[in-house]
Image 1 (cartoon, rainbow, N blue to C red):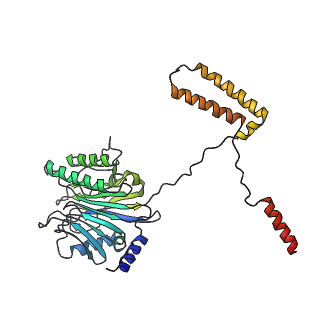
Image 2: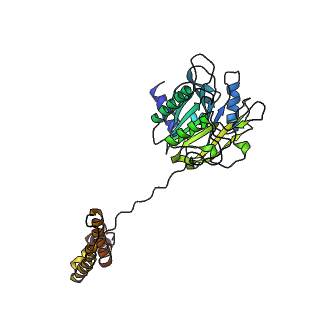
Amino acid sequence: MTSSQENHQRTTRLRSYLLRPNRNINIAAWNVRTMFETSRSAQIAKEMKQYDISILGISEARWTGSGKITCNSETIIYSGKDQDHQSGVAIMMSKETSKTLIEWYPVNDRILYARFDSKHIKLSVIQCYSPTNDANDDEKDTFYNQLQSVLHRTPKHDMVIVMGDLNAKVGKDNTGKEACMGAHGIGQLNENGERLLDFCEINGLVVCNTIFAHKDIHKYTWVSPDKRTKNQIDYIMINKRWRRSVIDARTYRGADINSDHILLRAKIQLKLKATRKVQGRRKFAVNKLKQLEVKEAFKLELRNRFSALETMNDENNIDGKWDNIKDCFTSAATDTLGYRKSVKEEWITSDTWTLISERSDLKY
């Protein structure tokens, strides 16, 4: 690729901002069971377009190795095992979103990282596929240690989204966990759910699909083959700093890819904090002290206020003494002097205006 082509791609990427205050984007997570089937990628891409999804995190992709490919107009980055067609994660991006991709790297068959460009804030996405609740503790510990390591490498000023099939049930009781989850989960908390909530609490993450009040049919993300058991085990999490940017999160049963998991989608609109104008410290009109009567009034007021300091009980409290002295001077100056009025100085002098007037007379 020539340098001109690289510059053109860089310019195109910088012009295609992903997050904007006046625009919604949809980010979704879905366990598709497998992408190692003919036309499966095309089916997923069709559902992605149907639900207007910009970034789709995929669990159980079952592709081997890692890489980046283009399917129709969508771009897919993936990370899997070297040989076995098991587990695996991927991220599918729309054509416009792929232009904003800054970097990405595969961690293993359960974790994939990608970072996207934007004008006001960068977006870091971590796609996950956690071991099941029945897995041994060593496997779970390894997964969360690796996930923690990836999160530490993420730029601290980014909007961070961690999503995927976490195989955890956080339940509906958020007592003591209000900082990391809402009151609209379903089911009962299990061991994996405790691990997930501890991870969120340590890293300042919020579980988005427990925040919004929806019907239960729009909350559960997994259905057993006999349709009797329904659980919420897939999640989209965001760092608390950008919690207000998530305006909705729910599942969509209409999306069909022959999977026992249901598409989970979050709607995001960038919310920026208004910058407050810092006011400078007001200055006292000390020039009034040149007037004898004002000077005597200030001295008298200050003397009266200082007399109150003699009644201080705690003579060893240096900070308290300083605060009282400062208050004496401030209150005395406020009452007798007042504040200096800012006068906008004329940038053209009177001599200049005189010359301009003379020039006009001569011209006339």
